[in-house]
Image (cartoon, rainbow, N blue to C red):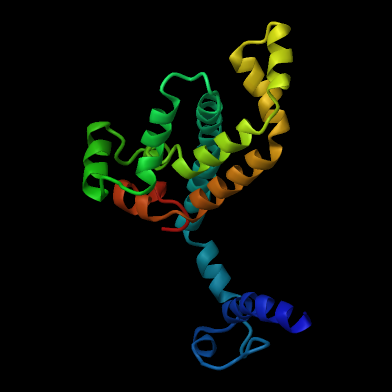
Length: 209
């Protein structure tokens, strides 16, 4: 187990060691446990670059608002699809599942965003990927396992569908909410391709670009 742990931790340690090396020492091959020539110049260079700070700012903005809006819209959609009395429920489910296997491609997506006036706007990094079909289906399936008696008792007390969703369903769905939120956060934090395609202003580029 100790060997397994070391095999996982060493690559991270190796990255840290390389970053603390001088450029010449860092380019040398071989396994290094300690920096060959210790220096902080690499960090000074990076931290003195203004784009590192604008990159962090844009990434935090995208991750926060993107995750917030995604969870709001996905929760509403999953709640509606989880109801067996929803008209044409299977049809809507099929329509949502199809994009998991087929997409229009990059050129139609780009032209659509141009027509919507989203190019070089922060919303272009959030709106097009606002809802993931996979996450929506996962949440729908979880909502379907919640006992109907919880919702019925709330409706007897006069709760509307919105109140049932936000005060009954979501509080008992913390597990799936946390899971989908984590997927969304990681996806937004690591994403770079859409920003490279749609953004024009260097100060609006996220950290990964």
